[in-house]
Image 1 (cartoon, helix red, strand yellow):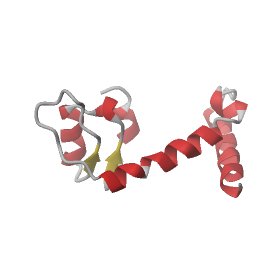
Image 2 (cartoon, helix red, strand yellow; image 1 turned 60 degrees about the vertical axis):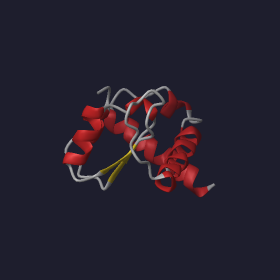
Image 3 (cartoon, helix red, strand yellow; image 1 turned 45 degrees about the vertical axis):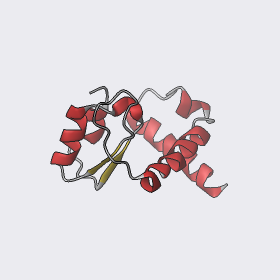
Image 4 (cartoon, helix red, strand yellow; image 1 turned 90 degrees about the horizontal axis):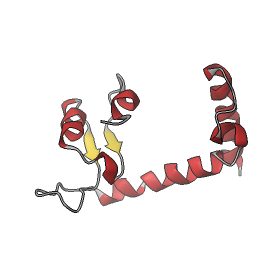
Length: 101
């Protein structure tokens, strides 16, 4: 399931928003078993399309635009820092700068 298992980890989200690439029945079942709503648009070739909360899916755009701005910082885009703690610290700095704009 690509990186979905690692991203979900032990979290108990209310909703999981993802793009069409994550439209896999196993992932949707895993999300629903956690008590969350899978907000993933169905692929065009899906035989039984699922319902999609389009209002909630539009919120994904806010995250996409935020990370596009954060990646303008070279250290965030290239993972320049060797240690995870240093990378996280600079990601926080970049996030603060983006939010202050």
